[in-house]
Every structure is written in structure tokens, then in C-alpha cells.
Amino acid sequence: MIIREKEPANLEMPFETLDGFLTPNELFYVRSHFPIPPVDLKTWRLRIEGAVEHPLSLSYEEICAMPTRTIASTLECAGNNRVFLVPKVKGTQWGLGAVGNAEWTGVPLADLLQKAGLKDSAVEVILEGADSGSVSDDPKPTGKIHFTRSIPKAKALADTLLAFQMNGETLPASHGFPLRAIVPGWYAVASIKWLQRIVVTDQPFNGYYQTVDYAYWKENPNGPELLPLTTMQVKAEIARPKINEVLPAGQTYRVIGTAWAAEAEIAQVEFSDDGGKSWQSATLQGEPVKNAWRLWECEWKTPAERGLRTLMVRATDASGQTQPDQRDLNRGTYMINHCLPIEVEIR
Image 1 (spheres, rainbow, N blue to C red):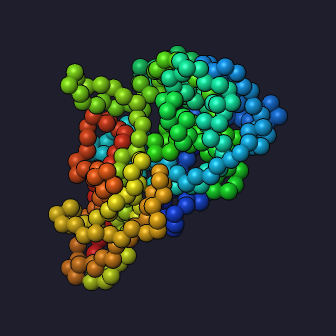
Image 2: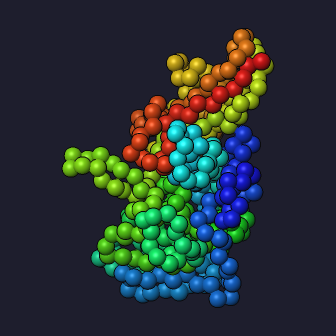
Image 3: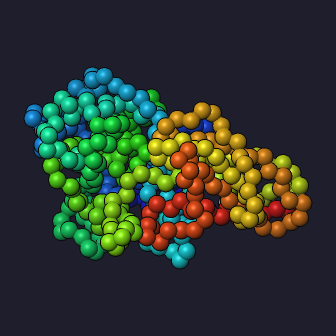
């Protein structure tokens, strides 16, 4: 793993090690804002409160005994690819590997909310992690805060999962043991780790991590509006060749990578070896899985002449959304999905 920060742990998958549909747990990127909180399963409880008829306090054993569901879902850090931004911006300098795809097993959040009895006034569901600490950048609240985000009631009831297994194994501590949320199709900031409390609220939640941080500007007729990050943008990345790799001239090379979007399936991936001047279609691998990435490959004849080559890839989803050529500056340091230049050397 590439160490982006030692404490709290922020570790990136070397993306060139991509080797299949599922990312092994030991290679799945780790994003932490605060240190991993200690957990004692004897006393740990998940609390569900707020705009519900029957507040709940559930043990780990009680949750694991409920009917489970397993889904494949891609999680991408909202700041993935930040190192490509010019000029350099603040924040963890992720390359290509702050993204991964895993099978998650757990209990549908809808089942727990129905058990608690949602009130008609419910609007949003707040997810609170046990991890906490002080925010360093202004503007900021005083004292320690928990890492907390909210999702709309509709999304909570539709497909959000409370997972206690990852790729068939007990959820690792770095990925949220004993319980984490998986919010399919959304940036991973919403998939709260070390989940300890769920609050159903009858009004919009304007917490730090979806207003001051993890938010972006969207243009509208009344002027720019600040919104929390939600759905992932359509995107493809090249895993091999890796950045600055030296390749032999005049040889056939198998370019591989992945592509993903939010709700819509990936419909097409295109590859360019001249910095986006011309494109050729890549071949999609396997069958599409909703909210999970799709592997692709492309047979490329490397040029006969020596020198540097800029490779690019772009994806289009079934709704017709295609990766843009240029960066949307309203997104700040997040939601980076423009076509990325991967430079290699032909020798």
C-alpha cells in the first residue's frame, strides 16, 4: 500500500496491481479522518433514535442474527486523483488508487428503520461514526466532533446496507469494524465507518462534513448553490501500464483498467494513445453489476518511434453521461472525473 498519511491511516492501493473484479481486503484503500476508535463488543451497541416510534439499542450479535444481504459495491474517495490537479491543492494527495470494489454483507438499513418505526415526519437519516477528533482547518467547530453524514430517507430505504463482512470476512478494523454503512453509488464519505448511532431527523442535517467540507458548488438560475457530495461521477482509469512505465516499441500491449458510475451501467470505454486526439473502443469484461465497477481491456500496438506517449481513457454510461475533457472548478478538490493523462515512455 502507498502511505499517504501514517496517523490517522490513509493508505492507497497501487492501482497497477488491479487483478480482478473484487479488491482484496489487504489492498482496499483506507481513508481515515481520525484514529481508529477502540471497540468492546461486550458493551458496543447501535442506537437508532430520533423520529422513530420505537428507539432501538442493538448488540452486534442481534444485528448479525438478522436476515442478511450481500452486494458488490464500488467505493471511491471523493478526493481520488487529487494529485493530478494543477496547481497543487490542499488535501490528501491521492493518485489512482483511492477506489476499490468489494462484496459487502450485512443488514439492509431499511429493515432496522422499519423495526424502529419511521414517523411520517422523517426526512433524513444521520449516520454517526465512533471516530472523533478536532478539525484543524477554519472555519471549524470548537472541540471534538464525530465523523457524521446524512442521507435522504429514500436512499436509506432503497439500498443502504449496514455491513459487518467484507469479501466474506469479518469487517477489518481499518474498514469500520464492527459495523459500517455502505451507500451504493455514492462517494464513500457517506459510507460511515465504525457506525454507532443512527438518528432519523425531520429536517435537513447541515453537519460539518457535508456543508463546510465534502461539498461543492452547483450553478442554478438563482446563483451558485453549495451542496453535499452524493453520487459518483462516470469515470474510467488505466491500471496498466502504470504511470511512467517504459514499454518496448512496436509491440502489442494489453491495456487494462476499470470504469464505474452511479446508478447507470457503463456502456462504453474508449482509449487514446495521443492525448485525446483520437479514440478507439475498449472491450468491457464480464457482466454489468449495478453500483460496481466494470473491468475493461484494449489491445494496443505501441508506436515504432521512441519517446513519450500520453494515454487517456474515458467512459460513457447508459444514460449518455461521458467523462469530460476538462475539470469542473466548481467541484473544488473533489469529484475529479475528467480524463487523466497517463504518460509512458516508448523505448
